[in-house]
Length: 260
Length: 355
Ligand SMILES: Cc1ncc(C[n+]2csc(CCOP(=O)(O)OP(=O)(O)O)c2C)c(N)n1
Ligand code: SF4
Image (cartoon, rainbow over all chains, first blue to last red; front, side, top):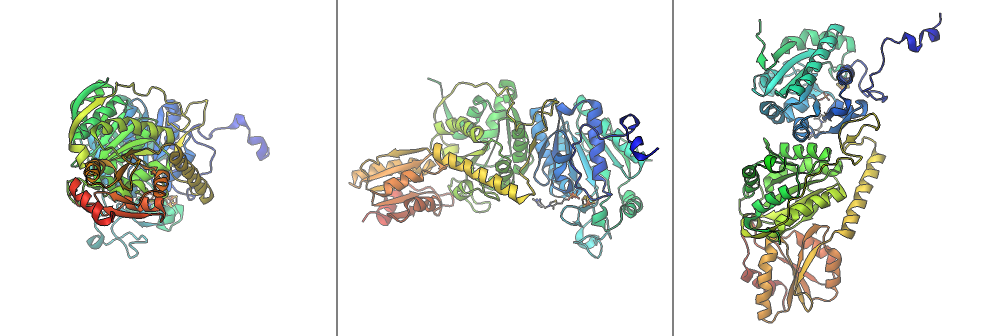
């Protein structure tokens, strides 16, 4: 049997979701953004809510998310995605609304919007991709850059005495009364991909309940910014990022999850 | 005749916004315009018309909430005063770039910096020349009465939607705070149809996805987009110039003034005429588009123009551009929260212009 005989529709086990466009992803090979896009769109497709979903792209590597996601989307100024999403959701309470933001966007320039959106309990979903660095602008220090971690603006490693500490913003907002669901996941292994998808599904389902904000943080690699191969970056992420940003649920159905 | 009420300018604009069928207001308190949100809060617009009212955590958040609402085709507005409007500029630039209609009210106070809470007209440059980054213009309406505060809320939304461009009401602390009789127009229904091809309503099987963005990484496309915007501004200049002339027919000198300065200058016209000085008043109602054609016409026959503004002289530059050297153009104005009296304007007129 040659390869052409195998590539037949009846043998198809995996295909592009309807909710992704045909555009070629502009992300660096090995980057987690593509997987996260796909999972988000799979959930929307499986829930059958394509026509009821409005997305907000932010400023960062994912600024062009609207080229890849086959849904109606707008593009927010740097840090303001949750304010833009609030404007949409308040006017269209029955639509599913989500933002897609990086750590610089959500936890530095947009910190106030993030906190107040969660505190008001806006009934929307924040997808937060934490790669510990400013990917798009070329690898500068982010609010989430680890102590000692090198970036183009902390070339000798983040010196917390001089540059301050990294911020664990999902943990912070999980404690706000308006936050209904807060979790931290990753997409670097198949098991984690499944868990992330489950979390995203739950977050979209939550919007039907109208009980508050859902935030799904995904700790992800930036192999280009970290100057590693994709495989190295995933290993580095497990060894360095996860101890500082432990995976797991922080708040589910409005209740804080007890840490063992 | 519509319902008559005695109202503050800030209240009139808020009432008119509800009546104009606004879908949403997002704001942040700042003097001298906090009555806008306070009036709306008392009115409970969600009960009257279903209009959304939300006090945001900052002016930045507020303008971006407007951006979100506007990207779905909703009629959204915000209001603030000078320092808050400065904060909104990035968002306003995005709104203009993404071609989204909305209404922004600036009840100007003295600056720079935290300045003063007293009235001023020192935000003219910021409002008419763009304000934020990039090549763009707002439609700028300058009310000179409480009545116009109400009327321009409706007109502002209409022009914004006609051109898919943010519109600004450039008011000041005098017009915002003073009380006058106002005739209110009838309640209009809120929009019920959102079927224009740019509005985000959710992608259905029978149409392509829609994207609201101001970004294009391809410079050739970005240039095209800029050219299209310029076309739009030209069309505004062609069709939307509004101004009022008082005693200009036989005038030898013309004062150009907008907003509360124009009200003051009306008195100066009377006083000057009693002194035998033939002076008229041209009141631009739209500051962008600016009535430059009319000023150019008048420049052929008058001896000079005096731009009267509560600033160090901003609109005077546009008057000069319109006059283009044909005759003398001077500026008079108090600033920093001080309001010139009709007598002071008359002195200025005599000192700078009348020989
Ligand atoms: C107001 C403003 N400031 C700065 C920038 C430049 N800028 C673009 S992307 C970015 C950082 C994005 O980092 P992050 O949110 O972590 O996303 P990533 O690129 O890592 O996915 C910055 C600072 C901008 N576009 N706008
Ligand atoms: S720069 Fe980093 S975050 Fe951006 S696409 Fe490349 S790997 Fe991904």
